[in-house]
Length: 199
Image 1 (cartoon, one colour):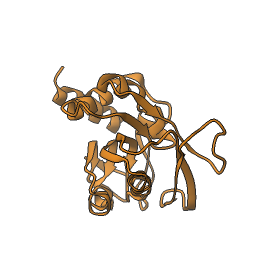
Image 2: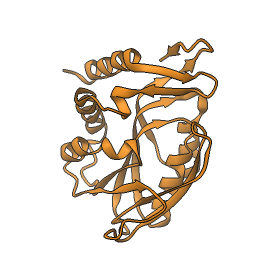
Image 3: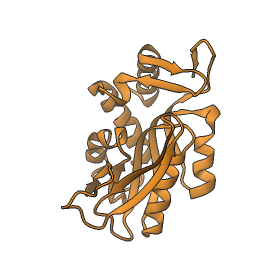
Image 4: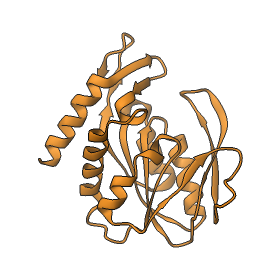
């Protein structure tokens, strides 16, 4: 199966699964992709990401941004043969066993929450890290995480995401503010007021 075939499968599955909860905010729920994850979706997505980053044989670790991103990294990490999957967690309290923690906070346009505190553990300087998340909308979470990692002297080699909401401009903002490129498998061009999704 070619990369194009895999992407076609993912796009078809996405359209079948996606439910628009709030068209004005662009709030989309895609259960099979980032809630109760379909193993086929995870497998195909991981293969597409691995094919994109396979040329880089010096990726030391992957980290999935909390919460959904942290559930997306295991197969990809194996395919890329990285040395570590860094833990991440959205919580006020850092787990006691964690070392070398990088913390960041961001706001969520979708949930109207401010100062959401998250942590990434076992971050050591000079690691080359691939960041993974489920979705990019306005890019605030990814920007906060990437900047925190960069401040800790981590080289972020890329951001891999399942889907993005193109009209909200997050991918461009991430590139402008961090210098990091995003590789998105599915791009939503628009959502109509009636809740119709256009890829």
